Length: 84
Image 1: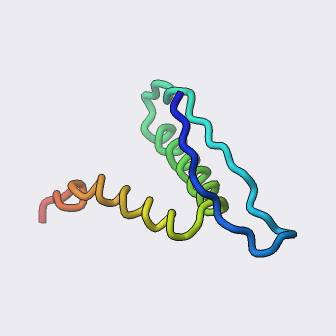
Image 2 (image 1 turned 60 degrees about the horizontal axis):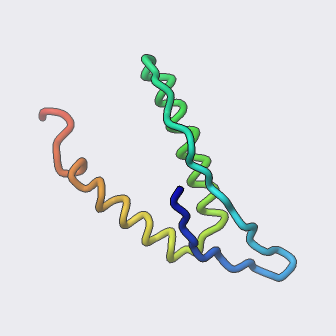
């Protein structure tokens, strides 16, 4: 199992510290034949992951993560999805 140690955000006050967060990625996606069901699972898990990261990471780390994710998907943005 790979482990990554990432800095968490600072709390606004000592009374409101940022919780430590663990994200566990251990199960493979089950085989699904229904695209709607698959989409719902991806939407739900994407929203949960985004919320966990927003609540835990410094803004600069989130910005850098978004940059890396967009760069890794840039080819999708260059290829037209529909004919004009």
